[in-house]
Length: 149
Image (cartoon, rainbow, N blue to C red):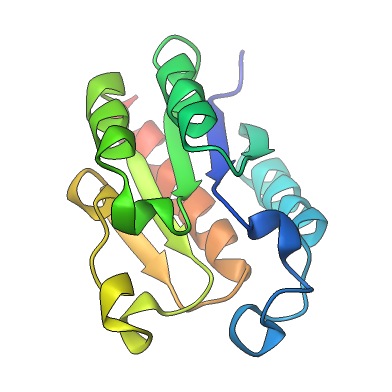
């Protein structure tokens, strides 16, 4: 039996985790985040495709690819969550369940970070739990996929 595929997408500057503002994002690297996701996926018996890009167009293209190959999307849109209507439109178009993740609590930060376009399409939003938030997001997505099976 084929394992459900959850695509884990990461937006701009997340490649600098561990270096960029560790007082906000912690000391974990993007490789550490991927390991958290791989461990969670193994425990949940799902497959993941883990990606990061700094390009808005590339992120939108990856979302569109999910329509024909994935069962759900976990996304940390980073700054694009606050700015990208194109990303919102792509997430609407693929008609897949979406869980939004942010490492920091965006609601305790600058006012412009309090709004996320991605939240309008997301089934749930996990923020402020550090990189462990990804494991929670994968659990939630696995539950959604199973419930809607």
